[in-house]
Length: 234
Image 1: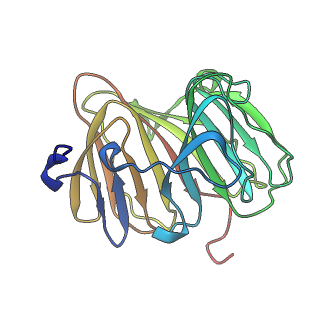
Image 2: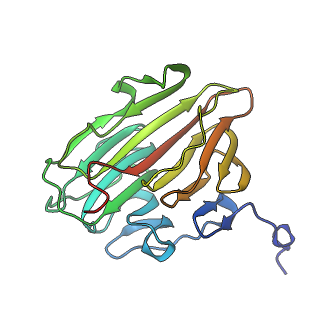
């Protein structure tokens, strides 16, 4: 008989306006059209999100299936679509893309309904300059998608030096999907406070109070999605 798994304990939790999903509770399954690949679905309409976000784990020669609308890919490790770790690509909905892996790889994938008309493009986060958030040099933001009105979402990488935090508790109309890439800290979501670490995923509904502080001896880094460039009534 296999051993009991933590006697039913997990940091994963689902609330009305937020989700914390930790690696111990991840379930892997293929999405339609995937070949030699599995998906860990983090957020989607089933939880109330207006986008789909998943981690794609691909074997050598693996392929993603067709996208639902626009697609954004960020390579966490390995090589996907000719990109190494830190590489990213945006595909508008009508792009006849074939995304394959050169070796065993992990990528974060965001898909969102809508055509987009920005044209497909790619880059690497290592080449994207960072700017201080609200003048705080200990909190740096890299904007992976330029502020282009043809794209209705934004993806940023945020890096916090140990002890740094957001300057206020944010509460806004935009929803978020966030994957911790490195380090850890404390995240306030609504009235709850959670320890978080690399590999954790967070979904935040619109108007969910949110705040983060980096804890530990190394920087904390995450990649975050938000709605952008559209009027809230649209």
